[in-house]
Amino acid sequence: MLPQLSLSNHLTCYALVDKALPALLQDGDGAIHEVALGVAQNLGMKLLYHRAYAEAKRLLDLVVPYHVALPESLRARWECRLYLDACTGAADLDAAEEDWHRAAALDAPTDPSMVGRCMFWAGDVTDRRGVALARVAKGLVARAEGGDPCKDRKVVRPPAADEKARLVARAAALSGDALTTATPRIEQDLERARAEGTASGRGFQAEEYAARAQVREASGDLAGALADYEAARELSIAAGLSWQIDHHGEPIRRLRAQLAPAAPGSIPPGFDPPWFLDAARTADERERAAAAWFAQPWREFPATPQAAAGRPFAYVLLRDAVAHSAALWQVAETDGIDLGDRLAFAARALVVLDRWTERRDASRLESVLRDSHELAFFGTGCAVDKKPAQERRPLLDWLGQLVRADPLDEAAVLQGLDSVRWTSLAAEFAAKVGDYDPLRDLFDAVRRAGGDGEALALVLHAYLPLMRNDWSNFGKPRGAAAKWESLGRALASLDGRKLAPALIAWTRAQQAVPGYYGLPRLGSKWLWPLYYAWSEAHVPAFLAEVSKGCLDNGKSLSKTQKAARRECLDWFAART
Image (cartoon, rainbow, N blue to C red; front, side, top):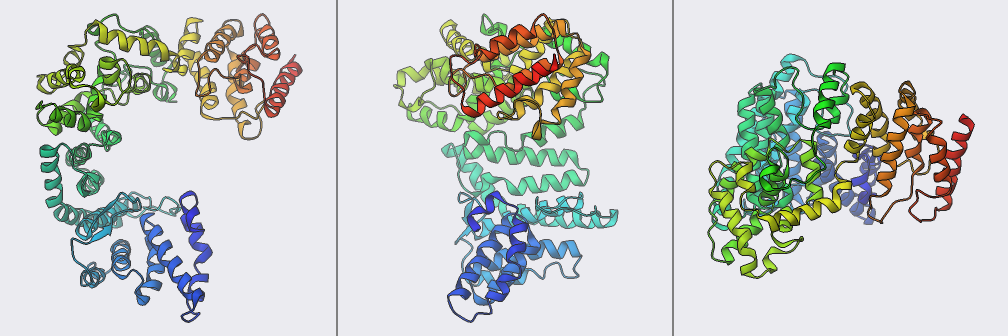
């Protein structure tokens, strides 16, 4: 049962054992008793890290009297009590400290302690206290805002105004204590990162700053929350893990937008389907956006680095430089090159990156030009530290130029990329441009066929669910796909004589783009829009090609795929 918890509702699992475990613990000191204790302690800790504090405490209450993993069990129950006492408005909010003090008598502050449910979240007892205080503070903010720290729990009602104020006040006190506890380790980690390049200690998890940021945001202190989220992101950068460079980036950008909102009626600079399909959009806004986006040469690779200004190529190069900065700084040190303060460089770079990160054209270009700094300087993705020093010197010189750049902007990033390096990027872009943004390819195809903003919205509405769902076993919209029909029917209001050729051309182009297993077979779902965007002059001939397997790239269909294909073509035949 316990190994399945990561894939199941934890509260449902708890309900199954709630009455059984206490009964089994009555079985004296035999094997059943011992197994029941182990299950209770294990499930109690899982529930704790899943923020199901009430249920976790009930299980921990069962195991503490038997001294099962006593120091850790006591600290876990202490965390549960902190949250539950704050929620109930207990008279003595410090009563839970008795469990902490009892555990402290059994070990030392520097002894190892599990900080979180992930095996890599290991620290010492002091780290555990700071993270637990932060965790409880965030849980109280979630409760104050009408939610619950446990994602499996359904919240019946949001708290009243006075209760919300009380919960936020308690969360503020706990988050302040968390930072007081964690500050020495945070300062140590930052200093170590500046001296050694990285710090993999507890501080980089940044729970304490993130908790206070949430408390400040809930209190209306947006500027203070922004400062705390920026501090939390700095700690993530200090860790030197490439996948952590934008931890806490989303709330940073959201708060900046709230503090300096965009002008009313402004259009996103790049293709933005959620904005375009928002019900609040007017026909005029959609048309202006469609005209602006269609005019952008997003599928063309700039002839020179200078021509790339205003497009996300500098963003991708700078992002990869920051993401891999820890490894690049180590290589530079090996080669006797002093690149300076990595954290200061990352902080300056993130100001530039934040302007692009949430743009679709930028985020999708990351996948097209993965490890772009290596592509530019070596022609392929590689292990930089395995290259000879003379071969990696140009990359490190370019990186040093970025560190010293004032200002650090797009021009500084693109400077130093000569024709050979730019050609390497161009070759990779040309090889993968088909994967860049299929939805935008569809947008352009419909616009090219004369579709206005409203027509584009109907088409995007119909195709987004097809892209998000497999539905590979369905020959026509049914079952889980049945609701799609309402989106498909909307296409019937458009001129099929113009729309159908555009959709067919887009489908052909997509079949020419290799996937993980090479060129794809045609899925029946890609034919569904043509049932409604019908054109007698175009669709029957295309369906005839499909029935002969001409769109399957020479691949045979499985039994299930053949059945779905037959179902789809029969569906079309019944239409006429």
